[in-house]
Length: 429
Image (tube, rainbow, N blue to C red; front, side, top):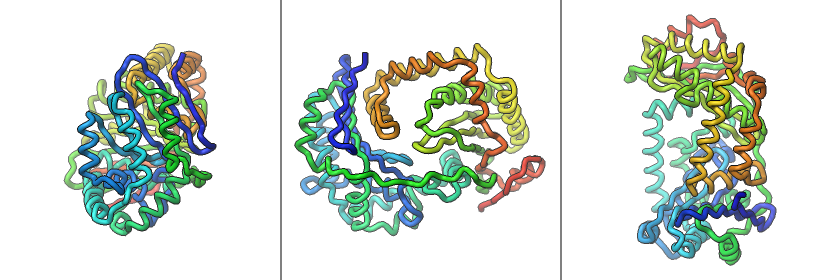
């Protein structure tokens, strides 16, 4: 029996709480159904900037005073920005409930987006952008989304670019927040030692949070794209970072449970086929995994690995063989049972963390229109059949992969020339 309670204040504003009786803390977050995919080419990064600027002062408190209040209460406060959602959240002892709800309400309604604070934060974000470019692991995924999504807003880096960040003004920030964020669907989610009635009553007094209207629509990206290889030349690297992916089902598709199991078997765990073949048997990689990234209207499924230049050809061959064998022969009963148990175990472990439950409930409400108790998800995994997984192997489409690579371009191009698979090659220096 779950302890989730939901109150829809209006069609676009929901309060969710999940009582966890055996802990003395709680997590509370404000989730806007507004992420970086709502941006355009000129204002990339504005969503992330707003999320971070919500801490930088209100009508009555400076940024320093806000940090002192949080730490004096033994709490933590942070913001987040994803492709589809953004917001702020906190973790606190249950005794600090009144303080935390009051502070969150003030941050949402009275943040001033101070000009001086904005200029300082721009410098911070520019450093973040530079760091992500220099980190080949992070940069290769930015490149992958760029080449896969073909200039759709989902392809933009969440932090934006140096040029777009520098161009943001205080007035633009303020206008975008009040006319976009506060017009989106809003979900306030709490988990832990929390009383739902008290939460709703306290929020009802803060009617500034309730002023939401119809959400803004977005365009679904096209899946009809040209296969490409995007290479970022990095002569300073001794290793090659490879990320490859194609499109798959969206988060709203009930087959996401089967896809989770398939991903675990392909490369999502230490017992997976990619890990066992490329790392344990061949010893040609240190890092290798498969991935699924599901959004409201589309999904991405792919693989990532790092290998030395002299092992690159062998790594490509081994990875391809693993994928094609899985597609041809399907999975085994042993793999199926192990992946089911692993998935249920991860759910159970996550269920012990109020932050995890808070995020899960908000995400499901915003993307699916309802919350899903842990017990229901476990039952969904228990009801899967091995044939369900094998049917879904068609979602693994290496012939449709767009590929991003970071490393020494000359060595990579020489290897690509040996491949028979077609694809446009783009090299950046």
